[in-house]
Length: 383
Image (cartoon, rainbow, N blue to C red; front, side, top):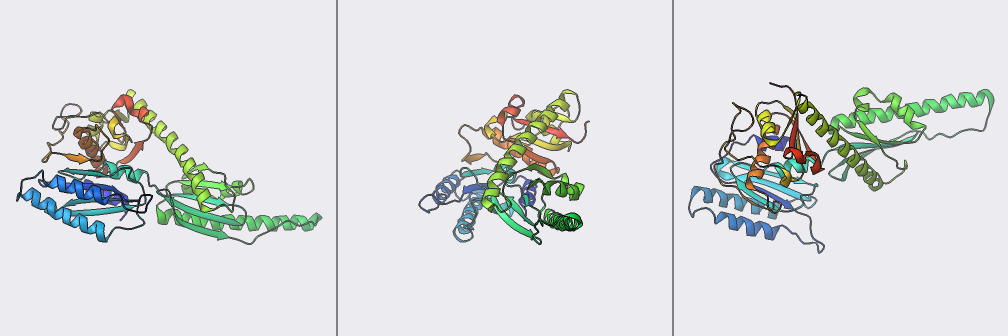
């Protein structure tokens, strides 16, 4: 199941009167090849179970979850995964695991009345699939990357051509013959790219080619593919995948930085004009509740989100209120000093966005949203 689909499923989980475990682990081995997560998991899960009365339904549910989590980590953990997220509530019939090659920077355990989704949405934002097309007039590689790793590499190879020393009409005929070969190759590349984009759900494409190939490629790309081209990179046509990855990551950083700034400016500008924009946690959450939000813009630094008191009415008059939590939130692994109210607010924002089909963009430059409580949105409609 795609990470987006799992996020949507978890966001739809109704708050439960029993502990809901959200466990995030960095499963990469240390420099000695040993795991770094088992000690954290044993210590924190055991400590959390003691916070519930012995023989209480809540503790019994949590202890069943601990047994199942322990079994999964011992027997089902993928050695190739860099991180794992586990969501469990036996009383609520929830047990969802997500293993990823993306990186979770630190272990985290959260127990509340619903899944803690901010880190999962953040992980998804770091793992977009994109394609890099590296081509010349007779050879192409279409590489798909996700979470900083190569997913696939499709080669498109045509007949290699070379010039001739003949002159006159023979040279002209040969040149036309050569151009036909080049055009045929580019058409094959575009066809292959089109299939990959559809099969892999690619939304962003990077291009690397020489000055002869570039105009041919531009002419042959249909609009639905050319609209997905976000930048050009410079690598040799025979470059190794690792070299293409490095160049593509640099390009995607530039693209994302530019896009973040443009989206934030658009939201702020629309808000100032009384149009399709909203800023601040309270009004953004109110717009999410009403289904107005097309794209949620949220800071990638959890500590920069301005807390909204849980259980108070948000936004303007007649807006829905955030429900009071059934269970106290118990967290570990969040940045030092992060308030529980911020954790819950972040989950409310992410959850409502997933439930209403709003896109979620994590803004890496925390200063862009610092004056607006770390949150803004582009709207579908106004009321």
